[in-house]
Amino acid sequence: MPGVQEIAAAAQASAQRLGIRKYDIYGSIVDDTSVQVDHGEAKQVKASNRAGVVVRVWNPAGTVGVTSTTDVDAVGLELALQTALEASPLGVSEHIPDFSPEATAPLAEAEAHRHPLQPAADLLEKLLEAEQQLLAAHPAIQGVPYNGLSQRDADRFYLNSEGALRQEAGTQTSLYLYSRTDVEGKKPRSAGAVRLSYQLADLDVAGCIQEAAEKTISHLDYQPIVSGKYMVVFSPEAFLSLIGAFSNLFNAQAVLDRQSLATPETLGTSIASPLFSLADESLHPERIGGNRFDSEGTPTRRVEVVKEGILTQFLHSSVTARRLGAQPTGHGGIGAKVSVSPHFYQISTTGAPDPSYQLDQVDNVVLIDDLHALHAGVKATQGSFSLPFDGWLLKQGERISIESATVAGDFLSLLKSIVYLDPQAEVTPAGVCPRVWVCDLAITGES
Figure 1 (cartoon, rainbow, N blue to C red):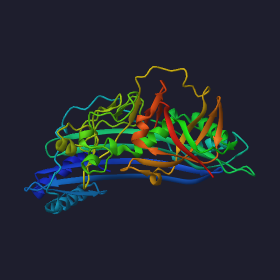
Figure 2: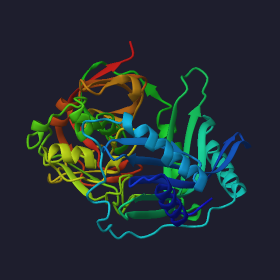
Figure 3: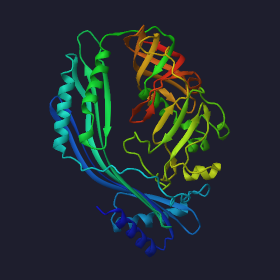
Figure 4: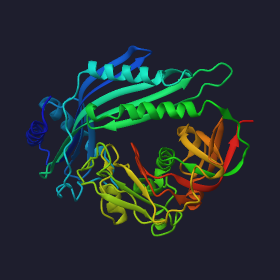
């Protein structure tokens, strides 16, 4: 597999032969290994070494052609450049993408986390042991149907014909365990946990087992819930998944495409409780696997999206920034159309701690641990949602597992109805977030 410097040199040589004066390339080279198990036996072992690039070429008329390839040797790159050149007359004539104005700007300093990958046999041994311990945690746990332990080493790079050359590399290890109960006369109950680290030796396997077991066991003795309006507490994972489902609210490309709950005029207005602030920060110190630049070569940075309830900024690519008179924020993704996507949310509050909001003291409050069916139960452009969930009814400090229920509402109304955020935030794979308390949400129990 050629290195980044070799790819850059080959691209430059091919572009000169083809008479191409303006081009850029974003790509990655990934080496990964993953394993799955089933009741003490290996279920799946996979390993791959792959590469892929997206190539953009501008013709003398200024329109751009885009292609992609997994063949990153000199021959493959030249073919990709030629294909993109041939496609360029068919490129868009309005809002034509260009190089990011920050493609050569200095990158933020960040610690490199790259470690040797471990043999697949070591991953398999570790996962088999984790499955055995989770099955032994309680007699009702009869299986861990969804599980996986994986590691990856990734090189990312961006280069263009004006001399930009970005490169970063890192490793990451991930574990997920999702256990399921089987008790006669009761419905199967399940729950899971995820852990990330830079290397296998640092992975919190014991914590993942404990969390999955405790959550699963806590749902064994379930009861139905009466339908009605409740104070609802979202776990960090649940609230971040809801934020992700409605991320069009902060996405400049969605705003321009009129596929967002916001418009350009929404900036500077109140969209949430003044207790609520949201930022996006790829290089957050607690994040595993942050990136220093996006696929346009723009440096990533901390972006204050919502400040004390006020929508202060959208997430931008270089294209949306130019159209809206803003600066790129490092959230662009090159392709046939430049996209915008978040990195790592950080939700915080300036509210003072309030001892009356304690899970072990409240009564008739619903605690939502995990939301399901977000692909079907969310109408992102309308703002409505109706989602099944796993959770508990809190009765004077006692947690009673809810048999089956859905939570429904309007996302913008939910943001306005936030009455409290815990002072202590938790780190999750999707971001940093405290528990979020929302008043008067509709809960519908199983009839």
